[in-house]
Image (cartoon, rainbow, N blue to C red; front, side):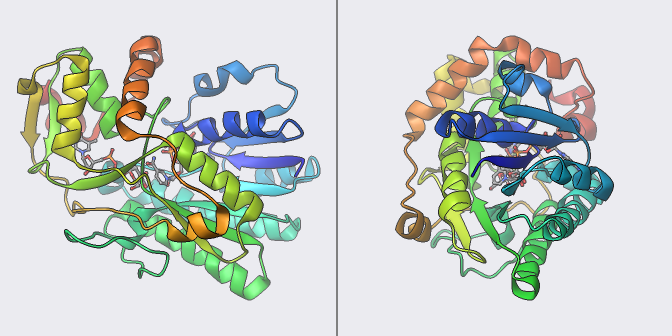
Length: 339
Ligand code: NAD
Ligand code: DAU
């Protein structure tokens, strides 16, 4: 593989993936397609400016002419699609951009890739397409799709389109589904960076509902290594689950963050629950281990510490975002009452 297109590379996971790929494969060059929505940030890849193996193309994956122009620009061996609207809370406020980018954008990419006979396509999906678990069990690749939020419904729709293109056109795609990522460069609307950012300013941490919902946390680089394995070794038409073996209630995670930052638990503020809030996610990654030789490497406590240290060492990264248009879901819903 010599040259690939990554979409959504200015976001959290895409930027970590691009940096990792360039490190892992000295022969590889990457074109990053990104629209630079509120979540896209050129600062996430500022260190790659001037790197001859990295190219940025600003544009929308829903724009067929633009995508075509990028695919025509050189011998592209593969496309990895990270570009998406990614926040459940925002999809509750307005699902339109989710339908547009996550569904229409995926369909546009699939059509363009098919036309240009791209040899490999990876759809970066999410465990949320499986819905919610009770207190037992884990999601396997055979778990029926049962998305509960507009976000997860749009991601499941995209997965179904990918599946249909494989079936109908022998399109060479694989799908990956991962649990909650943490690590550097995550946009501060998601739980971990939002709570770090608030705690550092002695502002309250809005825990939804009881705080007893459970998420499985995986370090972003473990996810990226899994996508790399699926890109290079995944079987066409297959789905691969990735998880971190680190299930935590939101409350226990919040305690861990506050303890690590030396901040009091009195900063916790219980707020109205997220509508339709999924109770629990957990991943069975046996298939990825067996077929791709993939295992998560990070130990959660050490990974969380390293993540907190990154945010402490990069205060300008969040400060620069906050000076932009960002207002969190709960700020929009409840104004300043939380802070
Ligand atoms: P993010 O919100 O941080 O980044 C998304 C990126 O996509 C941004 O750079 C944005 O500018 C770009 N983008 C959005 N719409 C676009 C469009 N129409 N055309 C081109 N670019 C566009 O998201 P993330 O957390 O990095 O997630 C990346 C992918 O991984 C998403 O597909 C998401 O569903 C999936 N995923 C995320 C997680 C997680 O925990 N964050 C877990 C599993 C799967
Ligand atoms: O499981 C994978 C998914 O993980 C990805 O597909 C999504 O793109 C990603 O955003 C993430 O979704 P979540 O909804 O789980 O992430 P979020 O960080 O928004 O919330 C994590 C948990 O914390 C969830 O149970 C809701 C809760 N929460 C979140 C925020 C932002 C709070 O209690 N308070 C908050 O302020």
